[in-house]
Amino acid sequence: MTVHAAIDLGASSGRVITAEVTPRGFRLEAPARFENPVVREQGSLRWDITRTWASALTRLAEAHGRTPIDSVGVDTWGVDYGIVRDGLLTANPHHYREERTAEAVAAVAARVDPAEQFRISGVEPMPINTIYQLADDVTHERVQPGDRALLTADLFSFWLSGVEIAERTLASTSGMIGVGSREWDSRLVDAARIPPGVLAKLVDAGTVLGGLAIQTPVATTASDLSRAATAFTGRVPQVIAVAAHDTASAVVATPLAGAGSAYISCGTWGLVGIETNAPVLSDAARQGGFTNELGADGRVLLQRNSMGTFILTESLRTWRDAGHDLDLTSLLEAATASGPAAAVFDVNDPRFSPPGDMPSRIAAWYRERGLPAPSTPAEVCRAIVESLAHAFADAAHAAADLAGTPLRTIHVVGGGSQNVLLCRLLAQRAGVAVEAGPVEATAIGNLLIQARAIGTLSGDVDALRALIRTAVSPLRYEPR
Figure 1: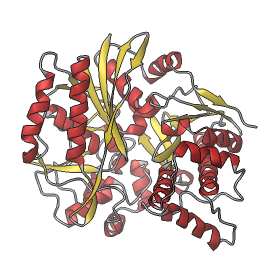
Figure 2: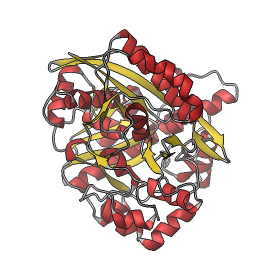
Figure 3: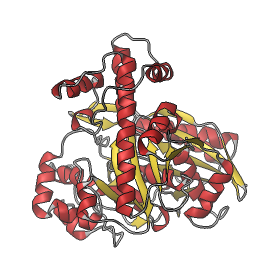
Figure 4: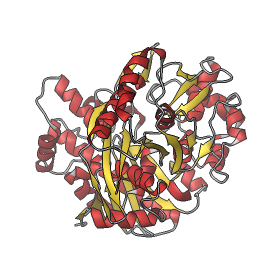
């Protein structure tokens, strides 16, 4: 038996979750959650990443104090990064929702046409992509020769191990990896005018980085971290570069059952796709908003990035700020009882991307089209869930068509798998069975890659999924 710890960071919160793993199965401990705060600094939206790092390290030390851990790995969202200079962070990383890249998008597109970018990287050119964020930083001299840009999970791995790397599944979200070569593509890197050496050496998921060697993010955190570091005396955990993109880790732990099995990793975002052995680089894929990101073991994740539960949690926040005493469970019960919405709306309309008053934006969307707008919180919630189900079903069928296989099953993992109304409506709209769970897919995928890296488990991703199927019993929703 080995014990592993996953640091799993999402857009709204993080957690440290540990598991005892044997070749026969695994046992998860309850996650230790903490806030992943966002701040407004230097005139822009940024992650308060040093505070998040301190919270994660504290929870990790507490877990190690209860049961010594053998290894630790980090997964996070994609595209965002920190800039390290002389071993220290230069500033808190920009948040992908900060609208700062319009000029950079135009400049990069003038050097490499967006259609060509897609053919090279397999990634949909989106303003949030790392290539545009870094191009903006270069233009404004926030990046200098000798600096290192580390994507968020790689930044945490550096602070844990002292080793600077770029894990491939996470790097594939950048828009700068050649989807065929699986290396940094010089045409794309040059188009962003990124200086040599800024991008780290690429490694595969499962690479052992070495023993825990805690680094100081900024000079002012040294004393606090030295106290946390004393908790790791004795057995020194190994630091593993897992499938560091949270979607890639989640797909590892999704019990897909062959061709025609689609996945939805549903949290703040809804990542809807099909796992394939080769990228799909057709004009139909590009025009359909699909991206080819790298998964573990050389798999390709043909997926569409869709709105997820962000639109629902922002609505709930708006109502609470207005004085309504609402919680998500009671709201979903009321939405179920309210009956079908008059019409679904486009959850991927750009107006719903920034934080803010979602109910007012939804009402405006309906009014602009001469449609009756939902008014009560229950009606708005029902419209949101139906519209998410519609978008997910459409993306799953489109992904299956592009992959050349009939859609047979949809697997929903992550927090959205607990939304019974969403899963029921998804099965209804897609016309195929929906299997919900595991909820903790991202952390489980992270943990299993660690266990394989140090030899407790063996085999490819399919072998790891066989272990999932023995340990987890997904809820099944049949279409009506």
